[in-house]
Image (cartoon, rainbow, N blue to C red; front, side, top):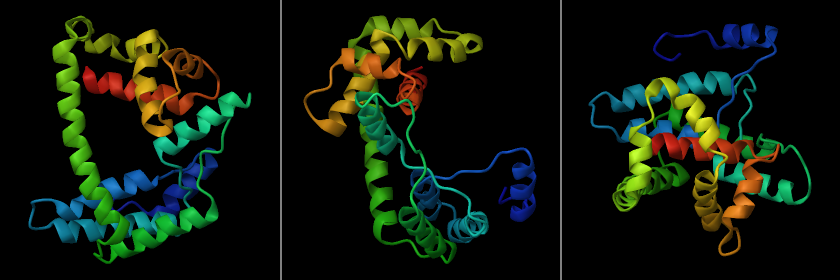
Length: 212
C-alpha cells in the first residue's frame, strides 16, 4: 500500500462499506521497524515512507490488536472460565502507545522499546531456527511426515494437524514459556478444540508451517 501510494481514507471508507477494516498489531509495527536496520542505503528513507503510510491509517482510528502471546494468555484464562470469546483489541491507552511509536518511526526515530524488540527478535529468530533444525534431526518420523505433505494439501493438513496430540505438544511448549510448569498436552489439546482457542490454533498452524 505504501509503494502504491494508496489513499488511506478512501480505502478505509471502501472497506467500511463492506463491513470490514484493517487491523495492525504492535508486533507487526516492530517487525516493520526492522526496515531501519536493513543493509540497503535507502533503508532510512524507505522506513520513514513506510511508517508515514501507517500513520495515515492510525490517524483514521485503525484498530490495533493485542500481540499473539497476549491473546494466547487471555484465551487460556477464558477457557478456564468457560468463556467462548476474548477481546482481541488493545485498549485506548495501549493503542496510544503504538501510535506514539509509529509517529516516532515516521520521523526516522528508532529508540526505546522498538530498538530492544528488534535486538530480541533477531536473536529469537536465530534460536528458533536452530531449535527447529535440532528438533527435526532427532525426530525422524516428524520429518518424514512433513516431507510427505504436498503443497496442494498443506492448508487442510495444517488445520487438521493443529488439533491433534502433536499439535497439542507444540502449544504446550508455548504455554510452558508463558505460565511455567503446569500446562500439560491434555490441557493444550482441550484449549485447541475449544471455541475460544483461535489464537492457539493459529499459533500451532504457524509452527507446523514453519517446520514444513
